[in-house]
Image (cartoon, rainbow, N blue to C red; front, side, top):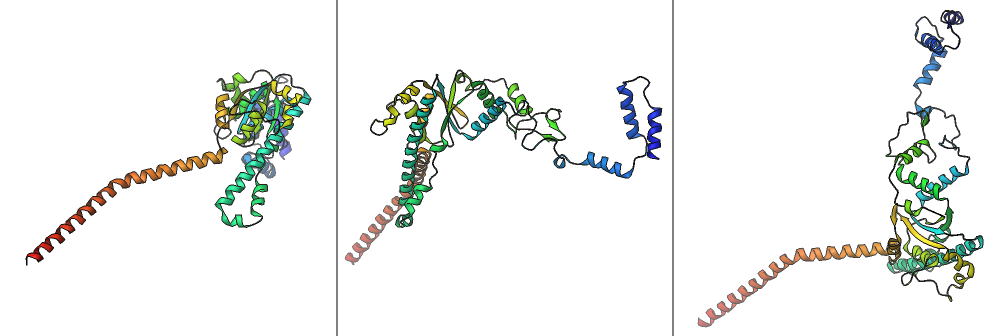
Length: 363
């Protein structure tokens, strides 16, 4: 019965001219809205399920590890963009250098000396932290294995601090995406067919929404003047002034605050390959906690004694002193009044005692 009705509708509404899209649309509208068109119960239930199913329960038509992108993700430039964006998001401290024709053996020697110097800083930081814990905790000092566990339990940053070359144009694009495209707060039109498919939203680095947000923002980034020519970056997993100071002393020494290492302590730094590489490196600036710093700002961060923990202890000491001075200032008036009244009371008691004695003597 259903097939006969559908065939009759098709013959009656068949277009007069071949290729008429308008008539085909009318046929589809008539077939879905006309009361005379009978649809079986299972087909109607399936159609209702398809239309009423929430987007969270839909099955995507793409691999979970490969969502639709603005540019083909199999290109090397696309993967470099993802890598640079991830590097910018995960590195709170990053130094930017300009390198001029550094050879492979020079890079190898430079990385070797940098890693060696940073390992020494890790060791010194671990010893200092263990000594601080031993002084504050007497019980751990009495334990024979306490200091060794503190020294070897400290996280080493030297293996995570690396220097690598970047492609300037792709790095600038990744910088704009990271700083301007905010997934939680940025408003972008997801109703377009190129942004969402079957109710799925795409907010990854290679998405069209991220690319459109970076293009629409016409403001000049603070690091844009530095991103010209061959660039390399030195990135840190955390903000550590001790490691920053040692890295500047190795890559771009500037006495007296950042002197070059001594030959007796670090003879490898004076190798010809290392010296050639250092002469070809120029420190341009830094990106610290999503803010741009010039060379003077970098040196200011590197001059912090004791690192962030030392800065926190100084701030705590300052706040404690402010509290002590404030309480003493507030208590001074009441203390002065108390001492004045006490002295007056003792004076009156002495006068009454003397008067009573004189009365007794007269009697």
